[in-house]
Amino acid sequence: MLSLWVVLLAVTPARAGDMDFLEGNNAPAFTHSTGLYAFLPPGGWNCRQLQDSAAECRTSNGGAPAVLTISHLTVEGQLDSELMAINTEKALKKLPHYKRLGGGRLLLGGVKASIRSFTFDYQGNTEYPVAVEELYVVSGGKAVRLHFETMTSAMPTYSGELRKVYDTFAVGEVDALGQVVNPAQPRNLPGQKKKKGGPPPRFEP
Image (cartoon, rainbow, N blue to C red; front, side):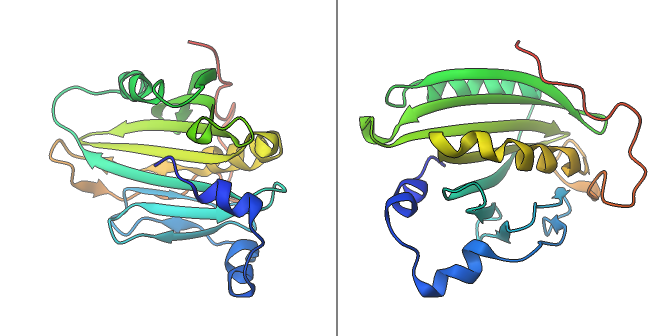
């Protein structure tokens, strides 16, 4: 999932045909075709489902391009979000100049999720530092991974928009075989009554 996309767009002017896609308008709620997850993209985020059933959102709201990729897979046996984060982190540590910045847990409604944030230098080049935040969540037989990346200098400006994604992100009820039995609906939409307390703050594991 770690891509050259952010680096290329940070140093290459957008083509005229890209502007509507990059800048966009206020996006409606996005729901995966299977009902596995749903959320409200911040204004200016352009989201689409890819052919392999992953989803991708692009934005340049923070002064530098950014991309959110959401992927999922069917799992067998016992797997929770924190174990998923630990296993993924083992591979991430192989990235050039990998540096973990933080991690934590939060609730997506009543579903536990885990977060990892880190930086690395694209192809080892210190002139192209990339910041990444990943969120992991498991529902029944499905594991979902949110991967957000942008240039390190732009990451602080995206923190509020990422919080909006997390505040509205919901996963559907999934059985042990990975089939969605109760489709997801975005949480905390404008006009909805927000549950008291909201998502708990992140904490260092």
